[in-house]
Length: 104
Image (cartoon, one colour):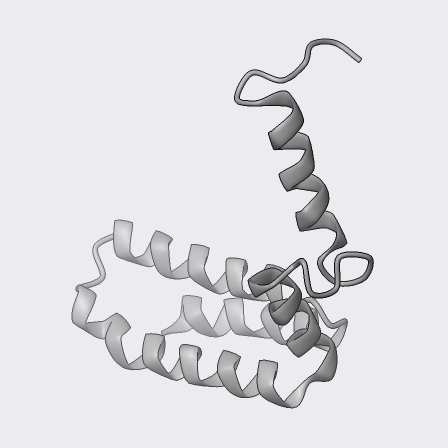
């Protein structure tokens, strides 16, 4: 419980920036470390469900986060805006394949 509390303060500060991705990674890594340290898995169920609900509410109420998630789910809808980076990664993978095109 104390370790989770210590992880939630930086996560809240990350959400204020807004940086949902790093906040979720921080909390997930804390949960993973607690699990590896021997915390029984049933103790993660209620906080995990609460976390999913809170992230869902955050994304639904925050316009920036909503655009980022929609850009991830359908990057070609806004390929010059929110989906630009993902579309470019598809193009790079399509041109270079698994091993790339070489140096340069």
